[in-house]
Amino acid sequence: MFSQRLNQWAPLVLSILRIVVGLLLLDHGMAKIIGFPVSQMNPPPMSLPWIAGVIELVTGVLLIIGLFTRPAAFLASGLCAFAYFIGHAPKNFFPVNNGGDAAILFCFIALYIFFAGGGPIGLDAKSGRA
Image (cartoon, rainbow, N blue to C red; front, side, top):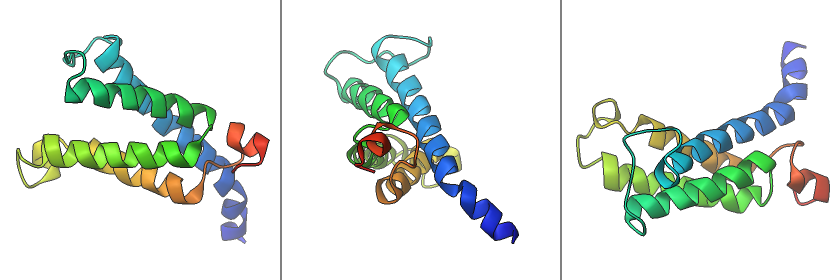
């Protein structure tokens, strides 16, 4: 009985998860590209971190609005895997010591969204592409 009630909420919570991941990706991309919110990240244009910021901006917006959700999630997942192995793993084997926890979580949550879809809230769902 309890599981059935929880299962009823699963699609909505999937949409909420997608939106939150999109907001966090957008936050990272904005910090890199436009300097807001102010952070230590200020990569030069066309550098690898700057390109990652552009991808974070675009995939973040797409995930927030639920448009092209699966391709955006796939791209975001690959970006985060790449970020982990290029930027974090060389520093230390353990994620807690190399600062890569967020990259791993983003990678696997985005991969889940790629397979699960974006849920009932979003432009893909409205257009029947979900």
